[in-house]
Image (cartoon, rainbow, N blue to C red; front, side):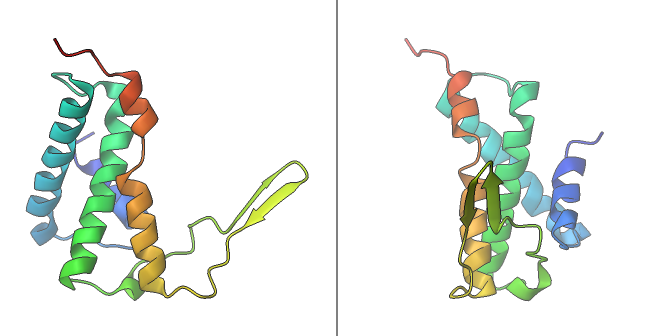
Length: 129
């Protein structure tokens, strides 16, 4: 699978159609995310197990960038896949999204994607001497 295929598929799952003009920005953001993880974990290469972290953080950064520059409107993204209710045994947690606009929900979700996988990164951290 090509390096960017998983990122493009993840974006497509939200209803965002990746165009040829998006690919340079996606590539730049992915490289930035990879370098950030390498520095944070003090590693030279991204292990296979951290690739999902790179992909989700890249998507979060990309969507946040596009949203902040006004290149697309929040109504072009399908927010239905986002979790609104979590049920574990007898406990149910429901998130109230009635007071949030689509743009606010998307910004929140972008923030969650950008911060995704911190524990996984720490698990691969090497000490610096």
